[in-house]
Image 1: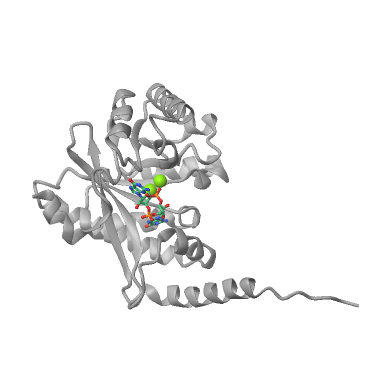
Image 2 (image 1 turned 180 degrees about the vertical axis):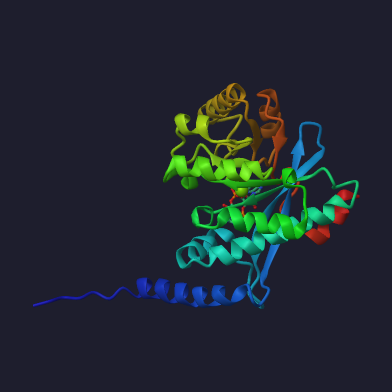
Length: 268
Ligand code: C2E
Ligand code: MG
Ligand code: MG
């Protein structure tokens, strides 16, 4: 007295996830990850820093987007080893930049996922990257999303303060898309918020997005936070942001995320 349905699409999704998980487990050892670096630009068009963005390049296949494999890496715990590799690689790049007068004052932003931030020894692992690379910690900025903060604000503040004491700064990524609570925003030792690209996309035309951007700017000003906008693709967007006193930008209008070899051309 039972009817069972079989959905081939569900099976296909599970199969492809298993295949990807197996490949992801080996990707680090096989050296299939790369960091791309997207320039961050100030109001005068000057280069002020870069965001390190992870790329997975399985041999003979298309590049896999981090939006696809980061959630899987989080579920499986692989994010811990991958995140450590990202930190070490970004710090090594910062060290190399220190030696070049054109790049020695640049900031490097590194994305940190919730599972990574909440692991027991996260502070120690960041400290390890700092010591082994010998960088100036003030050049390193960790990007957290609101999902990191959601869990246990007291614990998060404590951990951020420990990292602050090492000299590291923080940016709140994708700002406005999560459960932004003004009460925690006040308590977190943040340096910067990053206006999410979903708000930037439709300014200046969409009056709602324009109002949200203005509100973020006003709030950041009164809390003493710096602001950077991501996903800036057009001159009109940049002009609107500048008019509203947003002085830092990241987006295709300036440059896409590029591998480090292409930075030489950019710097020239
Ligand atoms: P995110 O940190 O918010 O990064 C911004 C995303 O916007 C990047 O996508 C970037 O390539 C893209 N982007 C930059 N400029 C523009 C633009 O002008 N227009 C549009 N439409 N998009 C633009 P990407 O590289 O695919 O990364 C997606 C997300 O994956 C990141 O979002 C971040 O949450 C995560 N991610 C990337 N690298 C890492 C990493 O090393 N660790 C962790 N935990 N997460 C990472
Ligand atoms: Mg980011
Ligand atoms: Mg973002």
